[in-house]
Image (tube, rainbow, N blue to C red; front, side):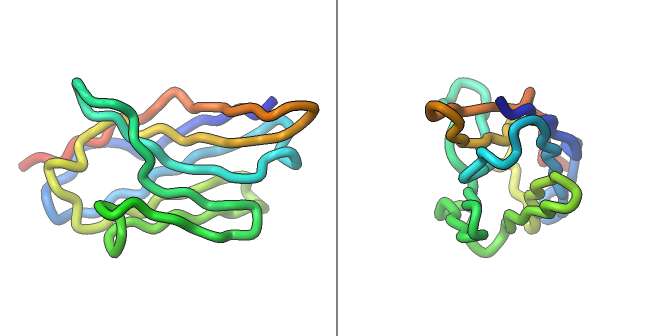
Length: 118
């Protein structure tokens, strides 16, 4: 299995920047893709960005040009650099790992709150 721990959330003013981190441990070699999701109050959890084992990335439209997903395998850490933040980016952000061992599995972190407000 894979364990995930997010950090880096907080309060930021509109237009500001924030970097989220997700440290992963466990059966790391079984991970084939990781991602960041977010969930605002009263809404469903949605994908923000995704990165595969070969560093191919994908972004949802609202994240394109403002957010950057990356991974440092030496540090077992995935990042989400968020720039030009808007109040509508306020949400709990979760990191996610898709892995395959003897069967497919999905792991989630506990989430970190991001609040964009003046």
